[in-house]
Length: 171
Image (tube, rainbow, N blue to C red; front, side, top):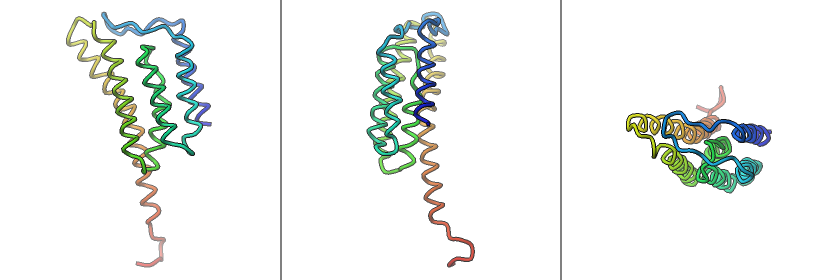
């Protein structure tokens, strides 16, 4: 169910960029590549990897993250967040592979920041460029760290619930 929902949302968002006006919040904002079949392929592969997030969480995370990084590094409009977000959350709830999840998050954040750099490189006003960096950098960091943190909290809650002593049990 979650795979279909994420795929539907990401395909709709990507399709919306086909004929839409390019996103340009400030003068000098770098243009993005036109949406092409490779963008849709990255969406399908990245979201499709979520199908295996329960049985093969780390490979699913790796594929979702790689598709996201490819999507951004090919300079499409900002998108395809949901697949790595869901995969990061899933891996964090398992708790066995935190280093790999952190590495995937770092790869995704690096791709995101490279995307921001490409967009802001020609912004003439340094204050405006800084504001764009702060705004986009913060949003991207929250989008990627948030699911990991939420997954860690769920994992910790499950651990605590497993250790609770039932009422009237041994003291």
